[in-house]
Image (cartoon, rainbow, N blue to C red):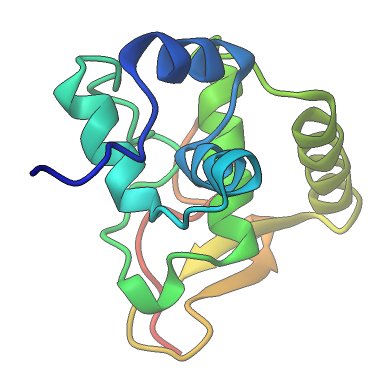
Length: 147
């Protein structure tokens, strides 16, 4: 006998995606509703299987670096993903939009941008905006730094 399906059906995942939930938020919602723990990767795999995952949602303009798993949950990376979603015309919930706006305002106020050092423990750093190495309005340094 096959084990019961824990990840919701295609229609439920599609509805949650329209609500703007991330794959992690979907996994959290599954746990809240069913009591079964599901990994973000299981949700991502189901989204791909059902054809619901958007190819190109990697936000290469906002996140041009190949980041390591050690840095995958960095706040700066999360904010850059939100920026990518916004720039792609995807919906952000109120909390995400407010967090992104606050973060961007703080960067502007401090005349700072985000830089990445894949070899460091922290990974992401704020540096002076004078070191920006591109013409777009994305608050990053594309070339990795090495501290």
